[in-house]
Length: 333
Ligand code: CP
Ligand code: NVA
Image 1 (cartoon, rainbow, N blue to C red):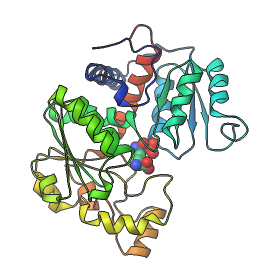
Image 2 (cartoon, helix red, strand yellow; image 1 turned 180 degrees about the horizontal axis):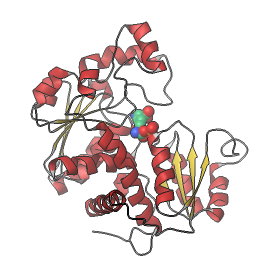
Image 3 (tube, protein in one colour; image 1 turned 60 degrees about the horizontal axis):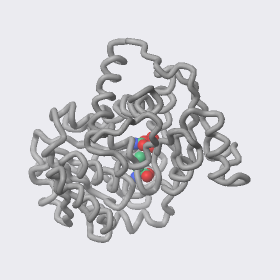
């Protein structure tokens, strides 16, 4: 069933039906084709949006900024400092102020509750650009990429390696359940997704012929996978001291040549990015000095291989975020 998307917020994929997610993906494909053809398409000219970032970002921030500009809108960025939000002014009051000035609000930060309060009180569409719990716009980009590589989502064997309780693990599992995919979380038991969410996704899976599987066994998780996906082992906002414990737990789940060989030559490697695949970053070098590991969740060899589609995913952040903005702010979508 498809409800009208105009005026809706995009806070979690749980609030969108299979058909609505497919509609957003189709729209993203159309917007991508227009962009690649050099067609100027500014259906949201005259509108203003604001981007609220309590955490760092390259892709999400730039996709909302460039995407908003592409669609003809004016875009304001508010970073972790420089506004009153959360310090002198509550989220509820901030929502009511911004809703009087802007047509749409993007939020990246910590609590899912914050993005929900913004949506409840602003009276305009609010888009979740990542919270500790969910990262729904990333999943649209990932799924558009899978469709481009395999032609469909239904029946795709999707294996997620690493911290499966984080925003990416949660959102990918929900998305896979909604779209009829076979999702497998490959991780030590203590990093499996929350039981209630697994239960909810298994309920959804009954309707879509998806399956939700959890395993500690790398071979079982990699064998016959179409997609091997991983994310950072320590997410934004987590304390520094968890690095050691997380490395100890997740090193056996690193995506390396052996894992890709188990999956087979037709499989693809995906990562939402940023990734620790070499020592070319401040944190990468620091980890190397402390733990003597030149790469963490994925080796340089796999990251740079022809099976890696990470930069297609990154580009698709733009087209899918444009689709979300266009669908929720445009007329009668
Ligand atoms: N994947 C992703 O959300 O990247 P940024 O943190 O750069 O936005
Ligand atoms: N799990 C990661 C995703 C980054 C896009 C984080 O929250 O830092």
